[in-house]
Image 1: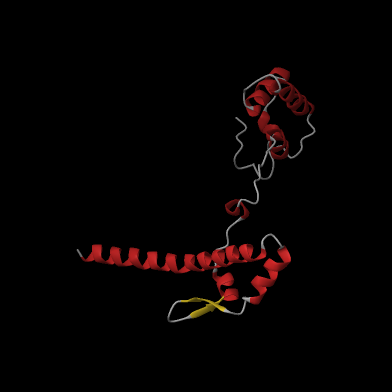
Image 2: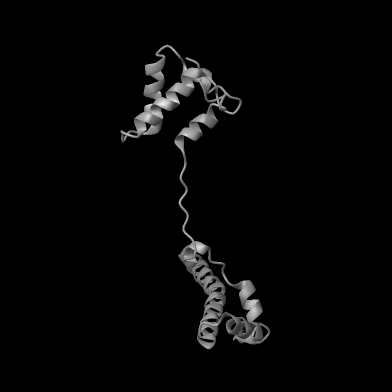
Length: 161
């Protein structure tokens, strides 16, 4: 039963700490909203408003008072994705990864297999790596990919058998 009490205490303490840190974000967001309403779309007026209250007490916890600048320093920084300011899509070229893993090999079979796999990928839903493997075997069934991918970085991961 003592463990339940300790868990409840820790959960309560964690909740209080989270609310404490979130409160600075709530206060500054409220002030930013007030500045927008005051400025009515004028960025200079908004900046002046925020600058004028930067040293004024805007948050009083009873045991400690915080100015707007101090609240800004303590607020939780939201990333651009949380503010709705930026969306990024990262597109990775599997062909470039294969080329890099082979240390930009100049092997003619390797180069032809990459080219053939690129051509096949335009008309196929298969993964590029699978198409590359098929193409490599089509061009030279006796060739070993291990010889091409045997780089310093991959030497412990490649088996020649």
